[in-house]
Amino acid sequence: MSGKDISRAVIRRLPRYFRYLGELKDEGVEKISSQDLSEMMHVTASQIRQDLNNFGGFGQQGYGYNVSYLYDEIGKILGLYKEHNLILVGAGNLGHALAGYMNFEKRGFYIRGIFDLNPELLGSKIRDIPIMDMKDMPEFVKENDIDIAVIAIPKAAAVSVARTLVNCGIKGIWNFSHVDLEVPPSVMVESVHLSESLMRLSYNLNNYEGNK
Amino acid sequence: MSGKDISRAVIRRLPRYFRYLGELKDEGVEKISSQDLSEMMHVTASQIRQDLNNFGGFGQQGYGYNVSYLYDEIGKILGLYKEHNLILVGAGNLGHALAGYMNFEKRGFYIRGIFDLNPELLGSKIRDIPIMDMKDMPEFVKENDIDIAVIAIPKAAAVSVARTLVNCGIKGIWNFSHVDLEVPPSVMVESVHLSESLMRLSYNLNNYEGNK
DNA sequence: TAGATTGTTAATCGATTAACAATC
DNA sequence: TAGATTGTTAATCGATTAACAATC
Image 1: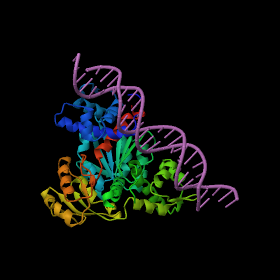
Image 2: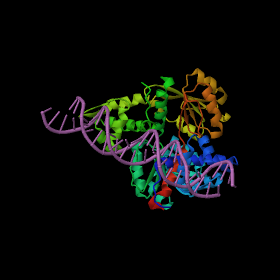
Image 3: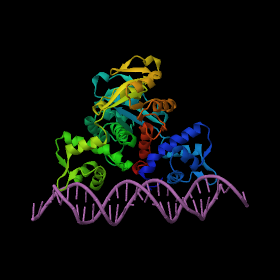
Image 4: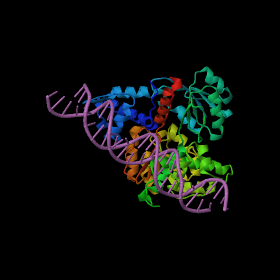
């Protein structure tokens, strides 16, 4: 794959295409036109074609797109057919929920270990995944070929944990703490800022004409 | 507040300004210039000034912005000084985590009730919030002035629950299920699609030059 | 007053949409 | 072949950045 830069907006939309195509596939739909898909997804057909053509011509004139083929191709673009070894840092409420979430494994994301500061949790397990002491994390990361860390701890601790992880050679961080982690450009950070999401909902409730 | 439309991009950034200003405030910083804030946040000073001026002139020439004042003003714009009554639908892994999250109450979002289909959970509580039967949900929503529902159930059920909630007069939905909920324009939906977030991380890992 | 920094207009850039020739 | 629909270029729209006059 060459280095032409795909815009951030396009990448944001890819997983949504993938989701809709997966549903169509499950329903046994064989082909779809950009027009029909655009109506389902409430976007323009033009945008769909433009987005897809960033990655190559997946369709056929006069026919449309083969659902199953396009689904697979987008999956490949998203890197979903590769396996990843993850650790989870933080076994609090949110960490527990994420560790319990089987769905990620379906896509090749395997949580191999869980780390927490709380000594009471050490030695226990979530879905057979052991909860270990934070001080053993660097060694575990290096020895188990861990490439992604899920960070679900308070922001104060998150910054230093991220630094440690970067030093251990982590490739990606899925960040749930309320802070923007600063890492070298070779380390990918994807943040889920729940409180910001809730604030946007709040804004919209507050500013919808009918509610004022 | 008049009806001039604020662009979606601006609204997306507001909570982040709020977070940085909150931190500055906690550190006792009294004033900040758009230039200094821009360096902290890695955005342009121009964008900060443009964004803020959508809502009015919060700064002062030659001085900058008063941190505490600006923080409060953005909080008001986001509607964070109003109280909201919420219900949580779905007491699974993720639902549990969300119910256990005290932080939302700090911002005026109170979970008043939890609903789940699993009969084993009925009658139990999370942080003193009772888990109730799904069939009692409509009455509860109407009688307790519930304006926001948090949906943390599988997508198959989510669509019909959302319909029910809309009929009960819900104002906003914070959606964690993997589906785009279709609701009337008066109902605000804010979705957190965790799997899409993980796919974006996957894409970035897969397509970073150094990793190929 | 001189210096600093905003608020705001103008210029630029990028993303979305429209249009249509290519082609299955 | 005729009809359908893509791939792609061109036009439009919106968002970001730059510049600077206003003003504290």
